[in-house]
Length: 240
Image 1: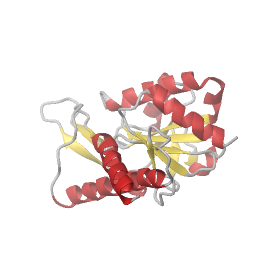
Image 2 (image 1 turned 90 degrees about the vertical axis):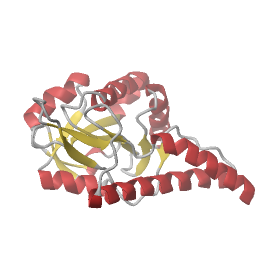
Image 3 (image 1 turned 180 degrees about the vertical axis):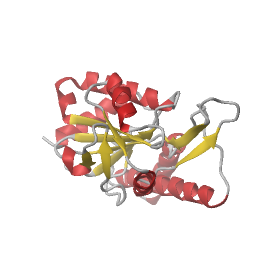
């Protein structure tokens, strides 16, 4: 049994490593390692997510079952339990508001040229693939650039991809707190000789909650819409 688990652990690490807690740059490149406390915090986040991912996959092997999700199964994780932010219409929001739906949470910003719009395009396609079940899925986009991404800018941006999408905004302090609670990393990166002034490096994983409000999955950016739709369909089926 131990030999089988060892082999499964190796496969799990290989599966998780390429798309683990990846950070996206506003410049479209993987973020370089930082220095000091920021770098240490990021390494802690990466290590925590990798450990959870490998543990979940090994547990499936120990039961004699292959992992059944395309995404990283983080069922039982004790972080990212709730949030309190404002939506793009100014309404106070928390996770319980969406009970009965599968909820996806992604952290990004409006000036992001690649990962963020790609995520929202994939989410729109996921809803198309889900058909009637799309009404039971809520997509949330949390800005990590609250200074520029005011609610009046968030609303036309996210709803341009799909009218059901909701943008979430908070003060700098609230955004930092939610990022800590969700083990999400982000930081400003100055862009010299650019009218933008700065970009924001940020995690590109999407957190997914089941219909009971439990954190279940971390979706890697590399997954296709078809793979994500399959995972969400399974969560919806569990919820009846």
